[in-house]
Image (tube, rainbow over all chains, first blue to last red):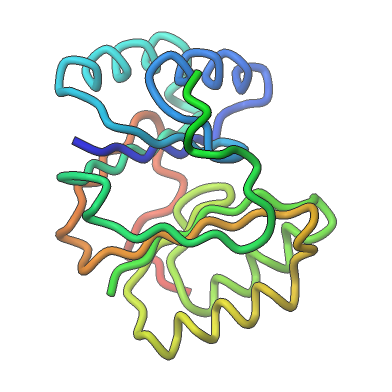
Length: 87
Length: 87
């Protein structure tokens, strides 16, 4: 499946969330990642995020799509990361 | 169509972008909006955003989906805004 993840977490945890998500997804811009994941990977992502964040204060939104073709992406301004750069 | 917009703009323009997008979409969390838009509304949104942002420095990603049912949304942590609260 294709996944878009956007996070709004306390500044103390931003870098940990970013570093963690880079292991699974492409970085798009500040607080935004995308990529193809298996169900098993997504479950790992959920578990990892739950360990990092403080639930009372932080929020992470995960959008699941059947595939990348389920949506059209359009960028206004400067692309901060090229989709090819998988880390 | 259903639209998800995530922005990464200079702090000087964050509030203008947020205030502008609130006219068209639901605020989900910091730098993230969602909602149903017509093609005409989306064109207004593009024009408005292009007027506000500095293209060399800011980035806005617009995801277009056929409908809200094209994706599944999942939240980890605290929902900062309820979908019902349209402004």
